[in-house]
Image (cartoon, rainbow over all chains, first blue to last red; front, side):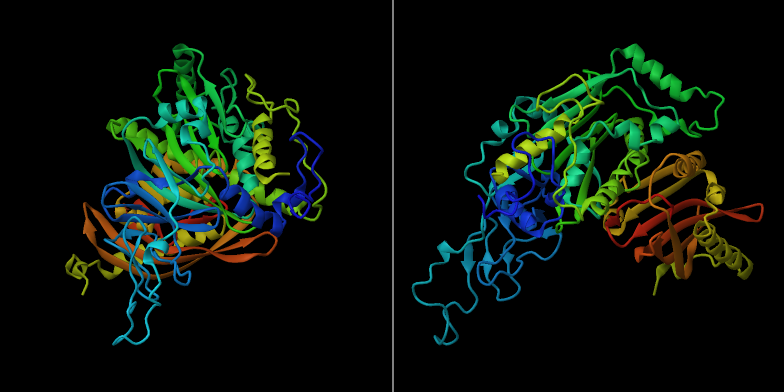
Length: 413
Length: 165
């Protein structure tokens, strides 16, 4: 492992509470992540089944920086393949999305069926029997690189690795249960957009897991007095610590009702919402969960903030840049009022999110502040140095430590 | 030829009023007079920012979805008092203001735009380009947006969007 750039970083001997700044900038570390992490034994989110409903519907996406095609084949199954022609490496699908009966490389017309099998090579027999591929060329050996695929509640996951556990085991019971709770019904795709950020992808994934900063950096709720300190909550982790959920639960229905009336009744202060319908919400889940941010390793997020439900995928775009893709969802059974509330609540999140816009910029500030000191480290010790679930949601960085536990294990450092 | 050419024509005075209104809006944003922003809209209104592909698909959610003047006011209060971001300015470049017709008492107007963003360190970039799709009503001689939909060419937004486009 000594030849690994990631291993040469200034890691503490053991533990996950001091992270060397070099891992956010080093190009060699970045390249190693593409292999060991994004092509390692993890399941990467690549899109939603709602985006490819008909046979031949496809969309392109990325696993790490590797381009992939997500397509519905003629049996109605979802296939995920590397978007790279077996011939000379050209992108097979250029469009972001579309429908095709076959996948054809425009460069030399090599054609693949929707399962990625190579079905025809243009001029394979030559022109007038002159030229063409050698007689022993066997198309069956040269399909598109097909990945393992599993789906859950319309989410499509793929992996390069034969060693990845089945999705259910990879996620673990708690993570699976939250996906059931949030997405286990007929969901509708209401919006998609992308947010480009001037920071390493891991800084964003730390931010997602960082419940400590929530009420400090994001001042919208406090400014307009719509923060609620009395809720109970905490952090759940998968058994291996890799995946996390940070959650808040309204203690009682009555408390929730009080909260809503507090928002709606104005006090004599300039900083109250002129239009409180912005934050009007309803009790969507019997468990009373008002907020649940879940991340699955390495770069996928499922968000429930009141009735704002969204998926986020953080794609690395070089050592110091990343792109966050958003899928904003509603239930197909929403009433008109519920749908309107979801649309209004969407103003809280995304690149223009009243609550969350700071998440787009703070990573870039960390990047600028720390990039010239690769051997110095962060301090991730709020709430201790261990990686264990906790009933304390605010003053802990435990799920960030869980991220680095996964990182050190997968990267072998 | 565009079918909307057959729609009722705005007279010169109306055209002038609408064009000035659209230009004034851009100067208001670029001059950081954002407290005036909600006043450009009717009480019940639409202000949304959405990319062209999502707009074409009829998606319900873009990156900003305001449906009342109060929500616009709250955006500006948040920008001034709550949100944290690096200081920056926009410069709107407008072209091709086109009145496409009339619907339900509002003029349908489209305008191409580019927004150049300048950060405090001096970085200058094209932040957004696209078109405004507007419904403009004229109340007591004063134009107001009943609806202003910003249809961005790109689905990608850099870092954050705090200042309205």
